[in-house]
Image 1 (tube, rainbow, N blue to C red):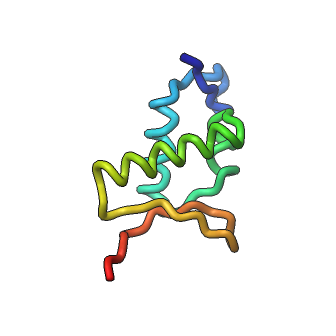
Image 2: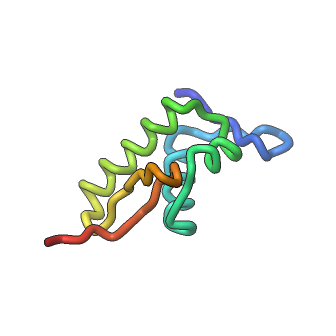
Length: 87
C-alpha cells in the first residue's frame, strides 16, 4: 500500500489512502466546498489519485449516506457536498 505525504508537515508524515480519503471528507464536511488544489496543498497526491478518492467518497455516500452527494461546480472548479433534493 502506498503512503501519501503531507506537504505542510516538516517531517513529511506519511498518510495511507484511507487517511487521505477521510481527510478529504472532513474538509468537505467543514468547508462544504474544496478544490483539488486545496487538497494538493496539504497532501501530495496526483490529479488522477484525487479524482479516484472523490469517486470513492461518492460511492460511500451512495451506499451509506444517501442524503448527500458530491458535486463538481465547473464555474468555480470546486467540489461541494450538498444535500440531495428529491423531486
